[in-house]
Image (tube, rainbow, N blue to C red; front, side, top):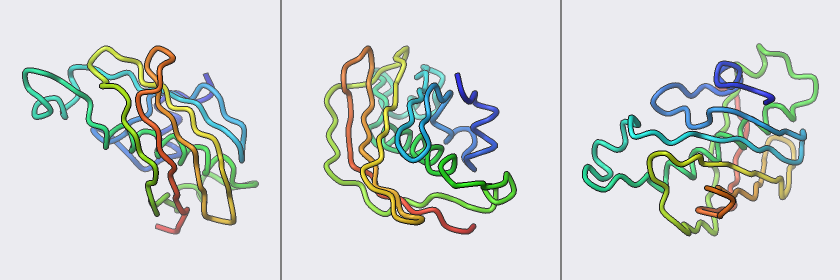
Amino acid sequence: MLYNVVEIQKILPHRFPFLLVDRIDALTPGEYVEGYKNVSISEPVFQGHFPDHPIYPGVMIIEGMAQAGGVLAFKSMDNATQEEIENKVVYFMSIDKAKFRAPVTPGDKLVYKISVIKNKGAIWQLDAKAYVDDKVVAQAELKAMIVDK
């Protein structure tokens, strides 16, 4: 484990119920990050999606992958201080080639694997995949930008 949820909260501005990364297990600055979220029936989203047939929404999977990518982007900033990181935020620019391969349900461990396609300054283009039990359940190309708050 590289970063637990408390350490992730020092990197990302997201908080419950919208912090969607529980842990970061691997990170190579400028190249790759791997993290996960344990999907629990206690997630607020399951109250309405769907009450008798809980399915974790694809949009939440995409957001979780983006948050893991945000950790990668922030941890790839050369010599950035904690104060500099706290004064920045990552904004989505685009989501392309999104595909949802299988449903994610309570009890699943959702593993995010994010690789850098391209990085130019504050702009990051990422290849994002989400897995459950080594099976791809979602994938997308994400583009984001680090900006001042």
